[in-house]
View 1 (cartoon, each protein chain N blue to C red):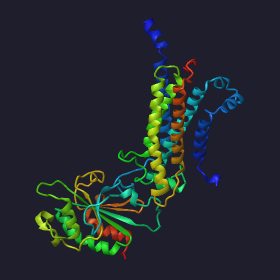
View 2: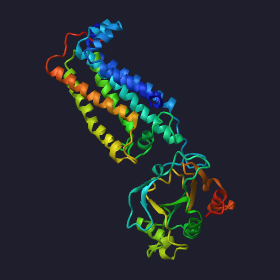
View 3: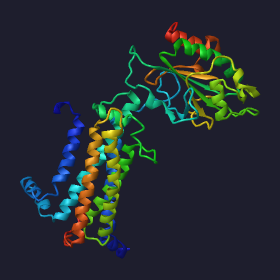
View 4: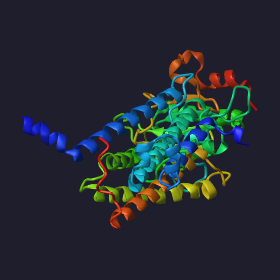
Length: 226
Length: 206
């Protein structure tokens, strides 16, 4: 026992490195304290009043040949925006190309885009709800967006028979579902309106369908539109 | 102009500046006037190690601060921790504030990298007479050298690639200076060790 103690006292190698490790851990603790004291932890979530989660997914702008660079919501929005200032709002709509309500709402989306598109950025995210018998694909999402010739939308119909016009805004591909859980999407169509600074202004899931849905929310927020 | 700079920038500049001055011969006089006889009596290599540790601490603090700025930008849209436009343009943009391939924020990466360098430098400071010193100095040289391409990339982003370039993020610049200074000090220590100038007679601190 005494020999072991003497060996420990003589072992300067272990001693110096041990003290170094303790010191680094102490410094890291101080750094984390600095971080906690000085930084404001963002309240992120899809609920109204919170900062929306980031949205990163391959993008297909209208008219593009194929899926391009990912759209990154946090890089697009203006976090310095303040109430009353001009800025581009967002409507983020989640759809499954086989969902019947998404099929019919496509026409409302065309109308709303004509009405509000000059100051509201429309983004539609194609997801897969995983319902048996429904299947979607990146090509089908583009066909839904462009209203082009493709069999498979809304349970086997040709996408060129979709109500409304071809959609002239960007579609995102989230078939792998990496974003839908953060946005708490359990059914489609699902829509959220964001302020230009990314704060959620309206969440469909927090309102009863009787309140009128997205068109009423848009009218309430923006009036008659352009 | 100076009064418009953020207070933490002064703190970092002073810490890193002191770390760079300590290894100089003139620093002996400074410690003498401060009645730090023990440090005055230290051999050059150990004073260099002390300076290295101070520089690394400055780098650690600068990295943490960029992380603070990022969290403030994320949470509130603006940052009181840095009012310079460069911070907003660079730290607030995920294209530039992530380590390529790793996807980790630069602030977190810097914190981990300076912690590793700090562990190496502190171990050498506490035990400067051990057989493992040489290999640890070389490891410090390699790890700090790996930071140089990262600094080069970030300077390229600041001067050329970022929106509205050139834009300068002063806190990032402090971390860059600490990285380069760490490499230079490890290089000098390595040369001193290779040349046999490493004072083996010095008593361990602990």
